[in-house]
Length: 249
Image 1 (cartoon, helix red, strand yellow):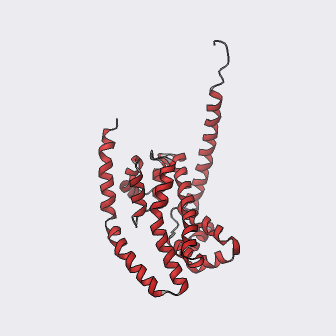
Image 2 (cartoon, helix red, strand yellow):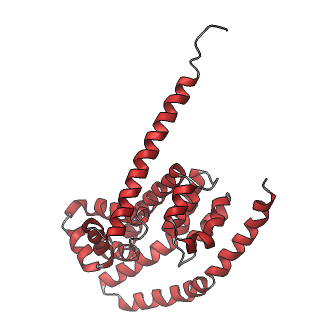
Image 3 (cartoon, rainbow, N blue to C red):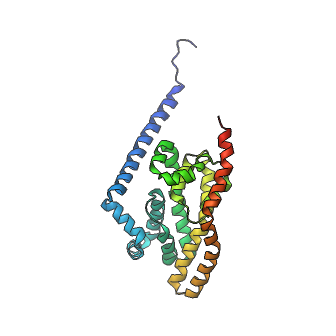
């Protein structure tokens, strides 16, 4: 009725303020992370050493005692969120320290948490910030992901070895893909590669070098062809997504 105050916009106004605050804090954290990497600051050097030096990482985790699984999960999540940190060694070390299946379990939890946080940051910050954070080469090859909606493409991309999966989390974040679809498909797609690293670490820890060699040979027989065909597979998905982009106004 005329003359009565309009209160329906109060919730929208409050949510708008909260979103701006969230964007501001995320931008500050992102800028701080970029500064750490760009200046090669001591905290970044420490993190890189953790992920590059397997002996140092093993000693660091053992010092945590009963809390080692929690520390390991946090490190796995962190290496996804801070993309320049290499993370292959952590999956191997998970199997070495915790055994094949516990290593897989802890790694999967950490990688899933990191992937979901990176996805959420991509969605919160938007295409402008993500495009500036991604290299031009990766954007040219993988920007079709921004149009992705299907579950299959997410699963296959996380299954293929050699793709920058940490960066891909951010790209899926600015796509129309629902959060729960990304959560399920990215987790399932990561599991085979994570299990391989965990199993290799467990075989090494137990001294079962015959099993390690056999497992590695079987893995190479499957992974090497996929690795060398990764560009063609990605190109096929990019080509399939091109018609839908052209049809949009």
